[in-house]
Length: 317
Image (tube, rainbow, N blue to C red):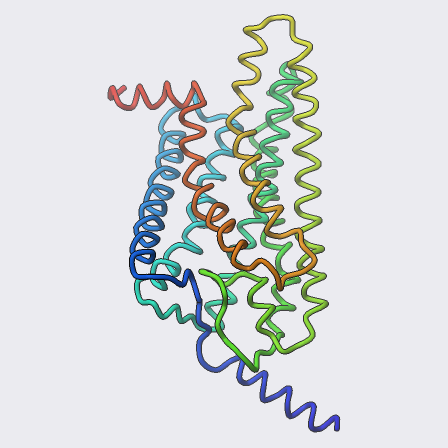
């Protein structure tokens, strides 16, 4: 019996390495596909152009070379690659209507999407700590948030994000597939891929849930504590102008945090992966396409320093 089980496992394992997976995408009429293709294309172009503009603007103006904008450049660079990991393949799948992707390509896409996602959590937490020091400890800000510390926080965010997803990625790579190879998504997400496996996926589900929970809770705790202290400090300020200036330095980051956490908490902190896959796809569009394109506009429209730099750039100064 054990020999038969080993042979069956070997056949299923071999099947998992043969032939592509199929990304189902968004089934529907041709008109829906044309509309989605144009939406994804415009969103992707705006995301890359907007975040590149932020990076170029910060690099070109000395006034913006502060820890706050150093973290913003890291976030913009991350958003470019985060969207690039999803959008081109989604566009190709919509255009060709086939959605074929190799197992290796699927695994690589999954790893980079979720590693970059974890990195964003840590970067947002580092940015919240930076705002806490700027508002609550302004006299010590320059001595505490040095270029060396901001560089270490950014590097730690990148290393932490790419390390956190290594365990579930290794477990997922060992799954075998012996049935349908159609992934009910527009990219290789963990949940719909696990659903296709004929292996026991309980360990993978628990590991994925545990990593997501730890990453989200730890970064959320730092962010919440930082903003709780910021709010208390702002409320205690006697000057209305001082309160306005203090809040304006945090409002852009707080807006990004609320959008990011609202969508990703729904997507990843779940113990079951077999339900609501269609709803998951809709929320993932917000998470992977809409949020990255909003960030440059949020930081541009709500940030006086960035608007002044843009004005000087437009005037050729």
